[in-house]
Image (cartoon, rainbow, N blue to C red; front, side, top):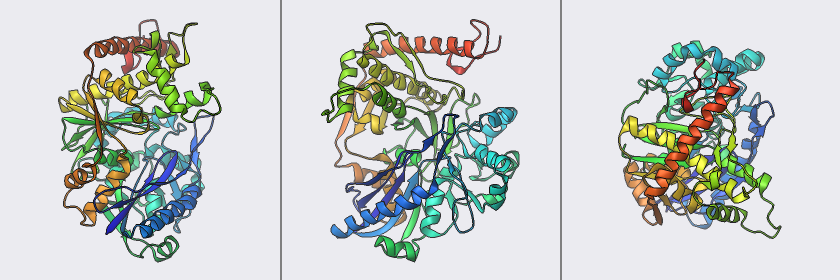
Length: 513
């Protein structure tokens, strides 16, 4: 039987998962790989860590395939988006990767603010430190020698594809997270490259998502125990692949993917450019489609921060997450008056406030650790609900949200999301949506499946699905708590921006007095 190895490069780890032709996943080969978070807001990673770890996970997946008598027919790659690595012509990195969460370009974003509406209209993205173009501009101005020597300014997925095939290629879904791709033409936009002072020849060649970008290099194949020349496929960016792996094929469904950051995604058949610039629109992993996206930069990271700093369970505790979730459930809806706004590294859409910080209010001497855990889960869900409301405004009613990501392994969080959104939330048990999306793209590219939808149905047919229906009373409670959180955010924003009392206008941002 033929199979595919799906490679998923996340923010804090990378994994390779072997799938057979029916979409059945074997146990993943995973290695941790956490970025370096500097106190001044820089977030970097040594590209050599990917060079060292990728062969390890691919060789292990290859050995697993041999043991299962599966013939690996392709490698399909997905990764985090918007990080930037300058490389020389041989593919060697010239500097640390500037990661997507990096904040060093905030002043550049402010300086280019007058061009924000123009850039958003063309790319579906606001000018933001999250996206690649500002990082490229920063490299040009601050690492001028490195910029001059760079053959290409690559994303992480591009770097992996080059390592495996020798080709400097990116796909349109990844390029749509740069501020440099025109959504209508799906091509690099020379006027935007000029605005961000990026030479066009520093950009990778473009291909549609789901494309085979080249064959596995012979020297790589020998080291990995794979056949030389098997196709290496650029499946799409991680959130696009997660949406594909969760079956996002129509506008009446949405996806909430909660990992290091959280994303709520909707489906569109054409570019959706919100005149108020509250959402992002990207090229989807599904050919010809787009995803409309709202982001919360920190979510799972906040819950991990809470565990590392406030969990002091017994050393023999084998399931600290389970214990924390149990305490959160015991706290009850509303967390006894505790409210968290999870802007621990700035806010995402619809706020786009790079100076925002986390807020925890309502503390008292009766506040428990469980209340804090519950407030974090509720705060993340309420922030995601801002994006959910925008999707319904722009795309129409949403009948179900498909939930995925590490936090959704806790049924409590899925129920909170359903209660906050006021709509059904579904969760596949045991499924890994991002790598599954990469398998779907690979299965279609290699002819193992006739269509994306057929591949999705085939792979998920045997996965247990749990549905969480909203409770109307809790939905009303969370509506009141969202209003409270918006007022708290507005008041704190007014103080931090030096505005007159009452000058802030809620979570849309402060208005000068």
